[in-house]
Image (cartoon, rainbow, N blue to C red; front, side, top):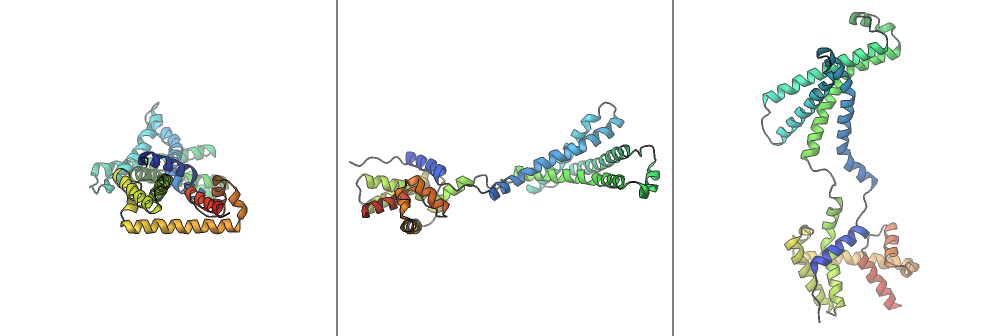
Length: 306
């Protein structure tokens, strides 16, 4: 008597097995590429850390005792305005003039306070704080090279930090609004092979029940297509092609892989004495991507011949 095939159970089992044993591993290049969009968070934190002391120092002279909260308003205000501007652009809306004015005022404020704060820190460190601005410019050529470089960097920081903050704000908006690259890497790979993997598992179950190969193929193909098309998105792209095309693609690919495994074992007969797991590992190390079912079938064929 034929037993009922529980497709839901087979699907879960095969998916877990495939993810554990056959799923492609991420390369170092892929991992780095996926992490790059998140670097903008580090950039935002670094810029805030560089700007906060200058902003707090300058505003503490304006509002004694409360300057420490100024970086939150200025730096986060710039991040917010850049974020909102990118959001408005993505939605094809018109940018409110008040938001534009806020961003402009915060940018000028950030430029002034960072320039003034950097300049104050440099002149104090180089013991030029007793001189006027005109006197420092007049003696610039006689200053040590380190002091000259520090004064130049003080001027550049007035632009680097606020511009960098705007870029960081737009980057954060892009990180939120756009799907990150490769976050569904393993699931994407599974969707490409789900039909073949589940079909093979169901086909083998029917063969084990004593059903003829032709009927087993037809029943397995129909049931797996019906299951995946009805309740799962794992093989929608494969199922969108005509039935005959799917079967030809699946059979052709499986046949090529099986031929590669046969040739490999003919060239390395000692491999046939290993377990399926070790054979899979050996094949992958030599650049052959084969499934557990394919390897098991080839091993059974060699056993029958011998």
